[in-house]
Amino acid sequence: MHLPLKGFRVISAEQYGAGPYGTQFLAQMGAEVIKIEPPAKDSAEGTRVAGGDTARAVGPHFLREGESTYFNAFNLNKRSLTLDLRTDAGQSILRKLAANSDAAANNMRGDLPGKLGLDYAALGEVNPAIVCAHLSAYGRNNARSKWPGYDYLMQAEAGFCQMTGDPDGEPQRMGLSMVDFMTGTIMCIGLLGALVDAQRTGRGCDVDTDLLSAAIHQTSYPALWYLNHADETARTPRSAHPSATPSQMFKASDGWMFVMCQLPKFWDILTARIGREDLKGDARFATNADRLANREALTRILDAEFCQQPMAHWQDLLAGSVPVAPVYTLADALDNPWLHEIGMRETVDHPDRDEMQVLASPLKFDGERPRNRAAPLLGADTDALLTELGYDETEIGDLRRNGVV
Image (cartoon, rainbow, N blue to C red; front, side, top):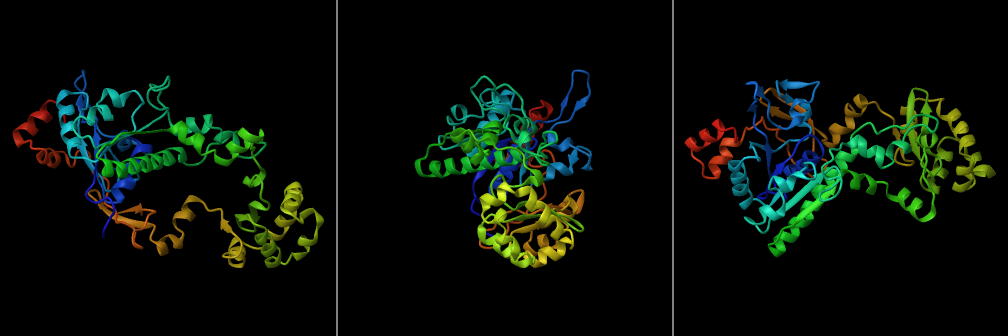
């Protein structure tokens, strides 16, 4: 399969979620993504300290000791190089790699890329065309650059938690780390944009994004409503849309579903399909503004209709005509036969599991999803990469004994 990034090399000093999520897209598009991970070390007390991305130790499910299932969610198709960037020898290896790479990415704390030679000021010396992408919690070169930070903190500070949940309940975070995932995707977009320019001009640059900036950017139209009209979007019952009605959750006889009449035509179709065309003639519901003003009354009426039949009935009746979806559990969502039909589930061979199930890429090229490989074991490609860089067996052995790799 022809992939658009085949032949491009990206080195990435990354860990945990946001950065690896973004670079996995690059790997799935054919780029050779070399994941730089700290080697295992002997502590001052003489005990062996595990190396590698901290995600390798995230439980509760493991393929072997120090190799988590969690890690495979973010690192498919990559290569692993153990390397201590805090050593002179490690820096020498990094610069040799950078000389023949197209990009270098990291998701370190904001003050660290400059100290570890991962920015354009350092790597541009050996490769003027290299793109250096940085993803941090709060950005580089500002008063918060040394602050650690995580997705949940950003959901709190960017207003997500106060906007999520029942109006009478406590603030809630989203069930998944969506700020991590969106920031990783934004980093990927920035890296690719700069890479296109570097291909044209021969000059790379630094590309920065951070979790808080990405989270704030995702406040989108509610942000503009507040900034321009002092209209602060608040929580709504049933997770309803702030302005379109009915666009919310309703309860069928066997569970919840989401119905979204975002356009007037969907309201007309809904009333006809459920046999309640009389609602169109009700002055309380004549326009969207009327329905919004009387949403509580409309909810009671539609609840009385929807609770008479199971979700499958309403899906069959409305699907393709009115936007509707079941509110699935995670198990239901992943066991949905539709995922098999569209190819969103895939199996890969892992050294510890012959048919490991993973999620396929959400991208298609010429109608096909790129195939995945299992995430690499820690340091699986170290010897091969060092050999490519010109190190012989004796030199590689010395690097291992000195804890550089």
